Length: 393
Image (cartoon, rainbow, N blue to C red):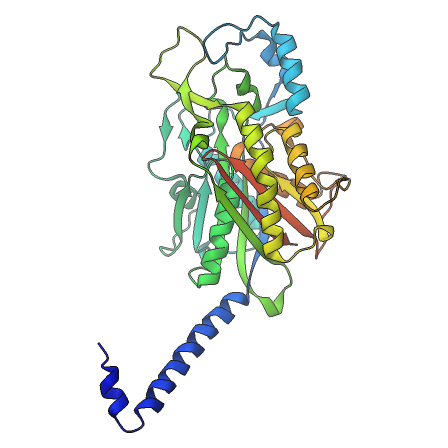
């Protein structure tokens, strides 16, 4: 340890201490300045939309049971029609038997890497968001050994040992959280280029006797993020926000036994308390989105698009209206919120990166992005977790 009394008693001791303090402060300020000079930019996007289309009509042959295992006597066609009115979902996509979550992730990743025009060997981190790993076909068994990110690195044939692959479990907001982590790594000087992927095969963990099973779908979306000097670009992440509520809310989404009364209790499926998830999202997500915009110093009038988790059309519309009301605005701008849920369903961590890829590549006529546009990514899901990212294109 340094004996300050001894140094003070030395000739010019006070000067030496003052000099050391000044040097230390300069190093700290220099580091903070360099962190502020880093912009996290999305340089490439890609997605994989599975080929099997499952329409609402396909579910009219199902027998539905309630959470208490009692049969729902309402005609299945009526159940399905009411489901569409609430969620907006007309059809969803499922993978075929030969495809895994990691396979979809690799396909989306290759598209993003090609779009970014980057050498895969220069990627510092591969972050893969999912909830169930690879679910073996014809089973409901999760396979996460090795991690999906490690499998993606292998499939991409990346030899660089300093490319670190890892998985993230954060519910549906997993891809957005991966983006937030990449931004933090860049500003800390740990990485310069990250591949962030969201991938899920929810069709393999659904209970066909549960009405909520009609919400879920499969898919993958990926993005390449790179650190740029702020002097060279105006694009990049402007602000982020994350919240988590794990008290009464922790089991709003979980794994549970089938609603069918004679099912094997040892086999568990994805379960959702739909009403509670809806109420939670309407209450908390708008505030988190506003918090993100406020941290970014962005006026609500500057916002061009909101890429929100595709879980439920009515819920998403409620969230966006509530966010604008927090700013004292009662009318939501037209075409502010792209929606893919009608045809693609809820593919969890894949919804936002897939939607962003579709809009970025001009496949949605009412939605275009131009340089300088301010957009917002926002998601909510199991945990319960919420996050948002404000980004300038």
